[in-house]
Amino acid sequence: MRPQSWQGIDDIVIVGGGLAGLFCALKLAPRPVTVLAAAPIGQGASSAWAQGGIAAAMSSGDTFESHVADTISAGAGIVDEKIARLMVQEGPDRIHDLLSYGVPFDRDLEGRLVLSREAAHSERRIVRVRGDMAGRAIMEALITAVRNTPTIRVLEGYVVEELVSEGRFISGVIARPDAGQSKTRVAFPARAVVLCSGGIGHMYKVTTNPPEARGGGLGMAARAGAVIADPEFVQFHPTAIDLGLDPAPLATEALRGEGAWLVNRAGKRFMADIHPDAELAPRDVVARGVFAEVQAGRGAFLDCIKAVGKDFPELFPTVYASCTRAGIDPVTQPIPVVPAVHYHMGGVLTDADGRTSLDGLWAAGEVTSTGVHGANRLASNSLLEAVVFAGRIAENIKGMLPESSLYEWAKNAGENDDLVTLEDSPSLTELRGLMSAHAGVIRDRAGLEHLIREIVRLERGNTRVRFASIASTAKLIATAAWRRHESRGGHYRSDYPEPAAAWQIRTYLTLDEADRIAAEIAG
Image (cartoon, rainbow, N blue to C red; front, top):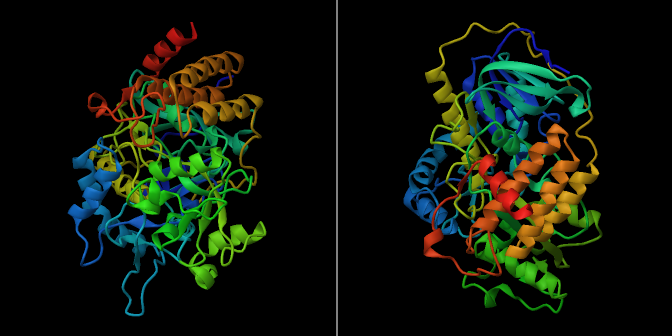
């Protein structure tokens, strides 16, 4: 059935209602913008769940050079230094933008921003809100600003399923209303499309991401022909709270920054034997340490008793609430933890202005691979990356596209829909288990080849367009991981446990190339 066409042509369509999407929309004002969000804005975005904060060199004792050096060190040899430097240098200005939108960052009695330290940072440079509520507070402020901007139209409950392409030019999107449950699809022709659709967490069995983070946006871009970069690099947060919940609550990195220890069931601190920085080692190192203890049956626990103690409820209210709802008192008890998919360093390849390899398509946020994170993201750089490149996209679009008089839709028109997404299909449930088992914290050739064959089988058995995009993302991750014969950052292979100089390069992959690799393996 042909999709119904929205009346007229939208000037700019933004896919996704998270931090990158809303910030870009605000920066584009007064240009008319339509934001298509799968869920009510603020509910389906990983940004709203971020606990740590935003990294920026704001203090007198910190420098851009130090922040760049920490980013490069965490990125395990494949960070694009030029892009990282650009992000770091623009960071303080973007923090001031967020302040102007009403974000209540923590301040001391003299009105100065309170800065904290997180793993692999050499300085205190994390700007926070009430300890662990940065994401929620930032999103609340941006949502208010967006609602008060008449040239931004937000359509909630619109699940974008396809990019409309004319050769290598993207000329719009096709979306399904009613949280993706409508029988009708709607076409949105546009002069520019900005993809801000988020990450991949729910392609895995254990994740800290919201249910909407299924990798569909990345797969959708790949199916349209976009070049994908570094898809094999998946970051596992080492301290998701192990309560059997989906998604798993997060015990923020800042707890370890305040001095919390990782111990096993016997009370033995284990990270000190693995890395000189112990609990403050890069996330991939800590995740493997936690994974090893859990796999050995010794369990892993975050002991905050001495480091935080009675101040826990005030300093980390979100984590405290998650623990107490499960009957755990973190003031007096260690918190059970497990690694969980938290962030995807890979994504749609973009340049310094957020342009993809397809004309008419820009991208920002977790769906992208800017080169900033390399093989392993530095804590709290993700929100910084989102606002820096969303802002650059807005400037680039305004410079490239002449002003448009298109503004025919009603002021503040939109839909609110309590439904979020369809229940997981059996295909997606099976895929999540396979990805966790074979493209997880530790990988090897046999497991990856089995995974690739199973992805091909699932694709053949489920031709729904949304699952096709998710499966495409899974195939890109699996084939890139199979092809990289080394361990680096968020990609660890037990059969190639060391980094290799020949592989100190970024991965660039198209879906056609991934399909060819998969066909050879599947036979």
